[in-house]
Length: 315
Image 1: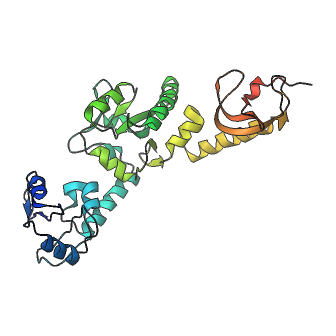
Image 2: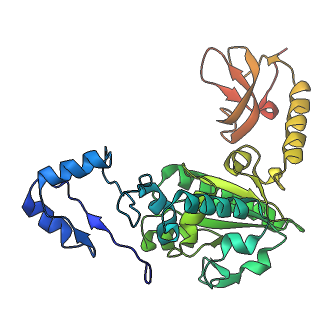
Image 3: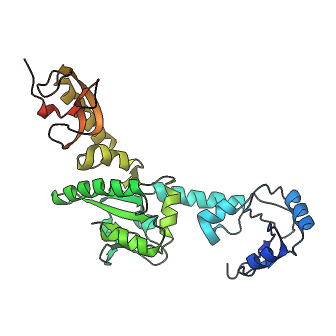
């Protein structure tokens, strides 16, 4: 905020003066004296009903904008002068990055025009232009992220081994610290936004990431294809490439055709009960012990599933 006409004044809600003094000594700004009556009057005047709250006053000391905590968390010092107009400008800039088709504006930041590889090399963002990009939002501390990372690595390696597949993944880490990030990226074959770079937070905001893992897919034109890449990879793996709506409809049609060619029920010599054709996102075949996906013959009496290829009909 250097060079800006701006000041913060702390209004303490600490329970006693000793705790107030301990709290305030780590702050670089001003404070009003510790006075419970004064604090209550200020809270009533500016309708403060929760903490933390940050109320912006104009230079006349009267005009009040909305609580700024969320705005500061999202944009930091860029939110100055903290007006509704500035909020609208920032949201418009986010929308332009999300829909603008300019990969360098989305991924680069203040002189950094590269992403990094797991071995620390700097890869120019310009080399990614024209590729399909997966922005992978995840963290090592999250068990669902670790499980999805394994599935994503399988799909990524399959695509990299296929000729002509212009595809790359970039980790947007939500790890808790640099050490955890470095451990996380060390096991990944793709690229990453540098951990100490503000772009990580910006991308989470731009694509409204609320839950991890998440995979946002960017097309060769630099525009977002889907924010639901996790479901595509989980269901179809590398077959989902290039992740367009047309490709997903092709896969769904192929699955329907495959199901139509299978009998609705079978009696297998390895099992006592009748098995019915069922659609399952994932299962483990009780005969070959390998993971299956989509079509299975399942028992309605007990927990038993078979790959269609593992069925041995009894006659």
